[in-house]
Image: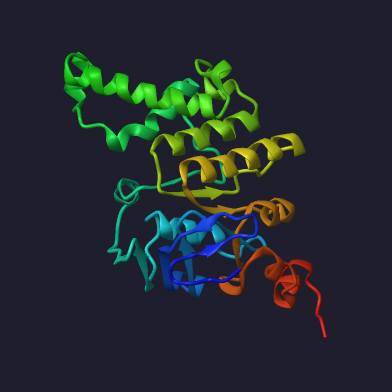
Length: 272
């Protein structure tokens, strides 16, 4: 892989673009505890960028920095060539950044369709009163958004559960609904926090396929946290490795796989 400012071509021939996001010297502290220490990395347009590391390495904290839930004490975030000021999560969402969560965060009493509809909230212009009356522009707007949600449902092959309350669904399907809610926001950058945690082999294969399809068909840039190294090595273009809040590796999967520091972090053994 030859990396240039314009991007690079993957081994399977996909064209990856220039830098869409850059994390510069990010440090995040909680009192006397440093969760992230002076970490820098970039994310290129159209790639699947994985963040891996042992439990407690600071991976989810990094996603929370990216989506505005945490604000680092030091460092800068650059998005689409501009330095990003301190933002709240809903402001970050309006920039085109969506995410899923390590622990499923769905409305269990609502249907699959209604849960995915919530992903369109930042795009809706009608006020609460207009939506309640449901006439004219408000009606047309909701019908348009429902049409977009139906496309997401078809894409994720969950038509059969569109009216089912998500609390009744098995875990793997709940994870797929959560992915659908994020996709409904039409993100340019999608943050996935352990999307396959707790899944069986078949469910992981399905989710891996959907992630690759999102990247390929929609051109969505993806930042992925995942513990299953087989999955990471199969679907990621580049990998950042964290350990105790520090970056210990960064590169294509094969480079990371053979990095002695990464092996030490995961196996807990020393190498000559």
